Length: 232
Image (tube, rainbow, N blue to C red):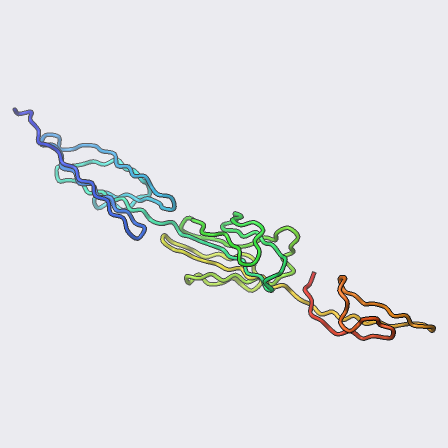
């Protein structure tokens, strides 16, 4: 009859690769219904942002879109873009230094109490400006260390002594940063002078409970050896 309508075909194609999912929707509408409305929606995997465009439109952020389908057919594409990944690793010099540090990404503590060779692991961030840095952990004083931040993937390095550093990232970027803390050191020499007359008794000279080299049983004036020691 005059009210008879043609069948309607819909083809949905999905292709995944390199962190990008492409969703193509082709619709042929009924003969007498020249315009139809549809709603396109896609679940987005963790660590990705979705963008949708239909026809010649620009991509717009979002995982769903209301679609107008005409007689000529409509093609929509959903693109999944992998969010930037940032990681921060702690290095200490010397390696056995007892200092601990809280490692930050965009001001948030991603690893508390990090020691040598510990880090945040991969942290997904939004595209744009990113800041990495550190705070002193329990019992640690940042002023006792010289800090240096170095990032790979062409993101550069912070100024000498800086405990935070900023750079920009885009979709698909993976950036690893290392914060190296070198313990400041000073020099110490312990001498012994006997003042006054009378018998000089043997004494022990110690530093932090450890016998000063060459000072065993000192019974006369003694000049110690200068030694490099951590500050603090």
